[in-house]
Length: 380
Image 1 (tube, rainbow, N blue to C red):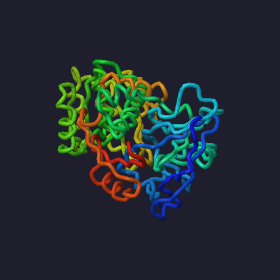
Image 2 (cartoon, rainbow, N blue to C red; image 1 turned 90 degrees about the vertical axis):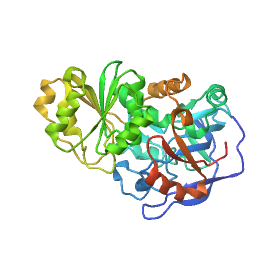
Image 3 (cartoon, rainbow, N blue to C red; image 1 turned 120 degrees about the vertical axis):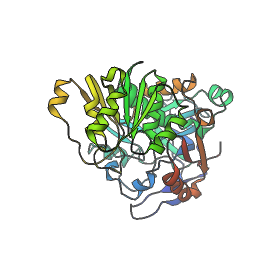
Image 4 (cartoon, helix red, strand yellow; image 1 turned 30 degrees about the horizontal axis):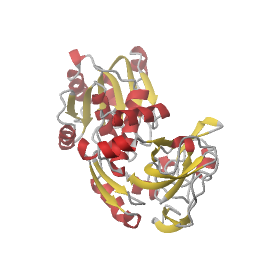
């Protein structure tokens, strides 16, 4: 089962939304049945992470106190007695999307999101409370995905920081593949497209053979996105002006024969109330099209009831990604369809746990698609 060490477990502790993160020593967790203890190597800091920790984004339903932050790349430290193939030393990707084993309708995101069901609090405040900003983390066995270290690290030269981009691309796969069911040659509208998740969803859709229209308010940011994606011939960008009729016309004009888009994927951020582009975008979706809501805003959106009914449009909410989508994401990386790190044009700035304040500030001010700031609780 692996030896349990008597060493301490350095961790960042969030006791309240009014207090800063505190670097403390915790015991190293023990691996019980159905669990794995992982030596955390890398976790990418989201630009909005500090806002979550200060309580500015209540949509995440955090129950304190805890060690915050979701997924990571790590090495297995110890396994429980019911583990069959996973072993100490294995390189793994940890997906923090956890469902109750006795009720698949109850979910939470370990260290990050308390879910919407009152029963999810039992998971967040109990066995799976603490997130990845610690040296050793206890996780559910089924949430550990073994990575091919020989191919990914030795052949491609990826580091744990590079590999943690899997967590972002998996979100794109969840929205584009699982919910959107995008197929080659279809036209996908993505907005706002210049954030991390809008960017990865754009790249995933292009890699699947789709035509993509990326929308946003900043021409400069859209130009950066085009450059980051190699000025791809199937990628068009459109600056939203706020003139709804003109914006609808511009999007439709960018689609084959002006017929509209097959899929609209909305990535409105958690800092917003409602979606800035939904009212415009929904009007460009063609008959039997699909709309995927995968952002994190508060508030509501207005749905044009008759239009959606007459056009047979389906509207789906999508949080995260299912197990099949994670396996697909890893396969896309291992087959070199999705490229990570410098091979994919991304940069990573690395920080230790004791440098977390600097890491959070940098992520908030300069972080985004392919510009990442990472905390490394343990050396590679």
